[in-house]
Image (tube, rainbow, N blue to C red):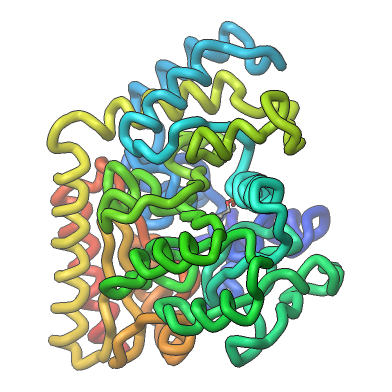
Length: 427
Ligand SMILES: *Cc1c(COP(=O)(O)O)cnc(C)c1O
C-alpha cells in the first residue's frame, strides 16, 4: 500500500498543527504508523489522498450513521447553504429537530442545541448543579464526556479517591468535585453518595460505555443508578453523545428502559456537522437562560446547516426497518470477527450494542476499565495494521468503538471479514 502523499501532508501538518492533527487519537500513536489523509468519503468507504480505498468503521467517530455523503443529506445541505450559513436568530429548523428528538426520545421534553458533545456535557453539569444547588458529581472510570476541566478525571485507584486531573492545565479545584466509581459498580456509587450526603448534584454515565471500547451495562446497573440518584436527590445524566440513535432509535435509555433526568447528545444528531445538545425534564430545562437563570450561550448554536443535516439524518434513520437492518448487519460483522479469531486461535472478547462494536484482545469478559485495560494493545495494533492493508479502516486504538452505517452492505461486510480472517491468521 502506497501512502506517499499522506506522508508528505503529515509532515507539513506537523509544522503548523500540534502533532499534525486536530484531535489526538487521529494521530495513530496507539497503533503505530502515521495517519492517512483523506480525499473523500463515499457511503461505507473512505478514499485517501493516495487513492487507497477502505471500508470505514470510524465514520468520523460515530456521527455518519448513513455513511459518507448520503445524497439526501448532501442535497438538503446544498439547498440550505444557498440560503446562508448562520443567522444568529431563531429558525424553524431548531424546533423541528428538537421535536424529532423528543418523539424518538420522550425524556427529551426540552432541548438546547450547542456545537459539540463537550459543550453539551459541560452545560448539563452546570444545569444539574444549578438545579440541585450542589457541587459534586460522580462519573465512571473509563467514561469520556468530552474535554471540559471537571470531566478530565478518572481518579487513580480506589473509589473514595478524590478526583485528580488527567491533564496538566486542569486546576486541582476544577477536578476536586468530581468523584469516580468503576463502571458497573453500584455499591461504589452508593458508598460515594452516602459519604457525601446532600452534596452530589448528578451522576453522569455513558449508558453503554463507548470510549473504552464497547462496554455494556450489566443487568440492573442503570436501573440501580436511577434508584440511587432518586434516593439521594441527585440528577441522573445519560451521556448519549455516542449511543443516541446508535444503540437504539430511542438511545440506550430506550434499549434498557431507564429514564434519565437529563441527556446529552451530539454526533448522530448533527449528521456529520458540528453539533451537541442537552435535553431532559422540562422543569429542569426551564432553568436555562433566558427562561431561567443558568447562563449558557453560543454564537453558532442551532445553526441551519447542522440542524438540516440532523433532520435529514434522523428522517432517514427512522424509516421502518432501516435501523433494524443496520443492527442486524452489525451483528453479522461482530459474529464474523469472533468466528475468524476463534479459527485463528486468537483470544478476543467481542462486544456489541446496536451499531457499535469492539473486539477486545483479551480472553476475559470486559465489564469496566480494569478488565478493558487487560487487552493486548500491541496485538490490536498489529491487527489494525493488517486490516488497513486489507482495505479496512478500523479505529486506531483498542479503546474505541467501531461503528456501522446504513451504507455498509453485504459486499462491504464480506470484504471486511475476508480481511479479518487474513489479519487474525497473520497474528
Ligand atoms: C464524543 C463524545 C463526547 C464529546 O463530544 P465532542 O463533540 O467530541 O466534544 C462526549 N461524550 C461522549 C460519550 C462521546 O462519545
